[in-house]
Length: 325
Image (cartoon, rainbow, N blue to C red; front, top):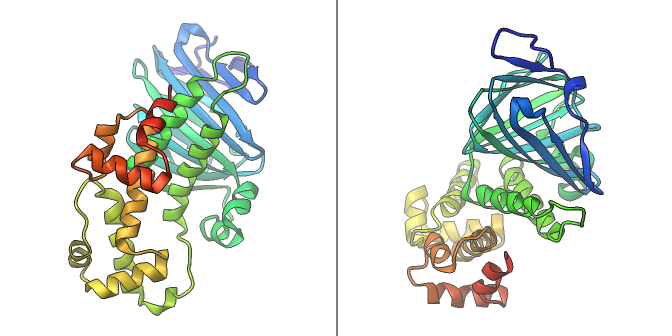
């Protein structure tokens, strides 16, 4: 290993990285030399064009690592920072920060650059990578064209991670850890579901679906309706009534209900229930107990939550919580 930069910093070229180790079919692990600390990445190909990966670096010195753009064609990468931070710097591209508690969405094609990690500070990140062609299959050309430009690199978003995003990331991280041997991952389906759900969370914000009747409301009214839905998503632990939501976004209750029908084909209370149940399911799958989950999605009493969950999914929340084992 050659120390090429100023003292204490180790620069690694692509040729100096250890060759990836194939663990089982599409499961790949790559580890840096042990003398640099505990630093490794793992990735699992879920289908052609969709990959999940997790990174854990705890180097004993600062590291600058060369990357040659390992993905084929144009890709979109969603990175959820779980611990610490790292920085990407490329030729003629803006610096990109990956930070704990934040989600970064980038798009690029065959990009060459460097990743920098601080010494003696652990970094954990989870990534979902999807090719542009595969994304078109799921969300259509119009929505993809709306967010992708012609440049070779784009930072599409950087924001604090939502509770739903963190729950999906925790589930993916846990299911990836189960793939440690030579056998197929027993949670491949769950991995796929959570990866697509995490992607969906980001693209609903980047390119909202345009629904029939959208023009029945002014752009200002649409913004208020979208704000109401965002409030629901971020305040699921609170009692959310039509009166409260309408007052918060400056609309009357009838207009609020009509708008939700136009935009989301649902009532405000129906959206509240849908988002609560979706969040509850991901929390239970990621290891949250039933009572804790009930409180986090706005139910004062676990029994009331269990009844609502059973009515919505046709099974009790305990079965989802127990299945994680």
